[in-house]
Every structure is written in structure tokens, then in C-alpha cells.
Image (cartoon, rainbow, N blue to C red; front, side, top):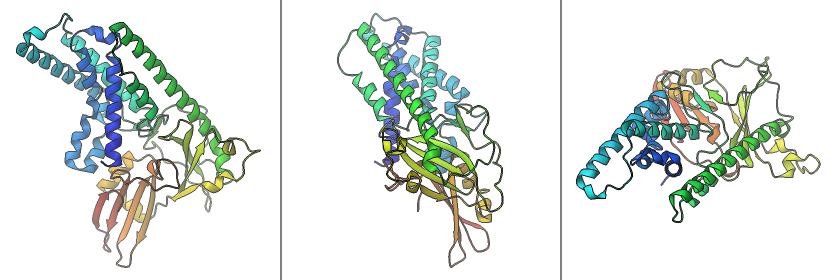
Length: 381
């Protein structure tokens, strides 16, 4: 199983366990069928996986799109409720004696419970560095808070641990309450650590950090969105400027973050451990932290601009938050343009490790000597 497939599996496992936890709350009182509705609804938005039938680019275009938006909440809520209602009727006809004392949930109640499960799914995707598009198809921008990795092993452990052991309905409610409190604490810790990493970023990258391209706003938005609604102001000739600072969460610890500094001509990445005094205390720092920065050039030559007009370029740039562009011409006159989303550059544990190979986070366009497109592909080559 590839790394991307493993992450997708663990992501759906997390959503399933959250649905099972919600089924142990008072939502279960909606009636028979509520638990099945919550389990299905907790994964329903990821039905966009069917887009892979049209290839990786089609999946990239539709992933976390309308199925995660308002129409998806309503449509998938009704569909989930319908499936559970029909399944319950078929089950009762085949096994009339298996009907317990629990009253059946009405179709309206199944729909409401299903919509709750779908909304929770979308809200869990929002704090991840991958992001989601909760307003599509009315607004195709991506939104993210950057608190959580795509799969949080600590959240997964909390959810799995709560599934062990037999318990009465009352004990199940208490377990669910404890789990929800621990989940909230986990999110809260990530939020505080994320802000701490952002506050630390200027010292980590100094003296390589230039002035901002645009004056910062009076209030820092809690939710980031992309593609950018307006291009940043260009720097003065021969200079560069800072477009954006971001802190990406790690898979291994809520205290390890990857700082991404988007410059006007490059991206600079730096790993930081908030528990390491070498990063946080200048008196014990043994080495200038900015020397440990990984740099990705981002130079928009005329071929890059031309490649951005291709179908692949448009779809990839609509998805990628931090696309680093580079171009080269070989001896045959073939021009290669490649973008890499630096959110997923470097190793999972550290920048000094090789990045996992995936088909979604690198895009390549090649032009022949006559300027015609001869190849468009996703994935590292």
C-alpha cells in the first residue's frame, strides 16, 4: 500500500471512529438506525473518491469539493438517510423477530443525524494542513487552519482506546463525553502550539527574512484560504519580499512544526521543535537556526506562465497552496516546467529525509521546440 493510500485509509478510519463516538452520545436516542446513519455519514463526503475513475487530475479537481459543501451536506444527508431507511425495511422483512424494543428513527430524524455526521466530517477536515472547500460549488477556494496533520495519530489513539471494553448505555455516554473532551484538548493544544510556531518563525529565519510585500492587516485571519484573491505587490528591482508565513503540523508530535516562508522568488522551509531550547532560547542556541533552512526556488519564467494556462496548470494551481515553480530547457529544445507543493516537500519526520513519492503534489508540463504542449502529468518523474 502506498503512503497516500495508507493516509487515506487512516483518515477514513478516524472519521468512522468519530461516527461511532457520536453514536454513543444522546444522538443515539433518535431511534433505531441512528448509529448506522452516523457511521455512513461520517464517511459520505469522501465519496468523491469515485473521481479517480477519471484519473488523478480529475480526482484533484473534485476532491473535497461539492461533497464537502452545502449541497453535499443536504444531498448526502438525504441519501444516507434513504439508504439506512431502506436497509432497515429490508432487514425487518427478512428477520421480523430481530426487531428489538428500540423505536425506529423517522426519516426526518435520520436525515438530521446524517447531516450532523457530514458537518462533523467537514469540520474535521478544516483544521488540517490539506484543507477543504466547504463553500463549493459556490466558492471553489480552499480553506484550512493548519492545526492538524492529515492523520493525527494521537486523535486516532484516543478514538481506538474508547472502543475497547463492554459497557452499559450510561457508561457509553460517559466514555463518549470523555473522548470528546480529550479531542477538544488535543485541538486546543495544537492551536496554541501553532501560534507559538508562527511567533517563533521570524527569529528562526532572521537574517534571511525580508520585508513583507504588503503591509500586514490589522487582524490575522484564523482561517487561511487559497488561491490568493489578489497577487502580492512586486518587490523593488533586485530585491525580494515576504509573501506569507505558515506553520505546517507534523505527524509525529504536536510540538514539531514546519515553517514555510513564501518569498517573492522562493520558498524557505524550516523544522522547529517547540520543546527544543536551541530554537526557543537564544542563550543556549549553538547554531544560527536560519542555516538549517531548505530553499525551493520559485521563478516564474515565460514558460511557467505559459504552462499555467494549460488544463493541468490551472487545476494544480487551484489546488496547491504553495506551488514552487522551476523550468529548464534540454539539448533537444524541450522545455520542462514543474511545480511542487512545498507543503508536502521533505520527509515526514524531517527536512533531511526524502519526500514521499505521490501522484498529487507535483505537476509537470513539457513543451516542444515549437512551443506546443507534448506532455502533462501529475507525480514526480
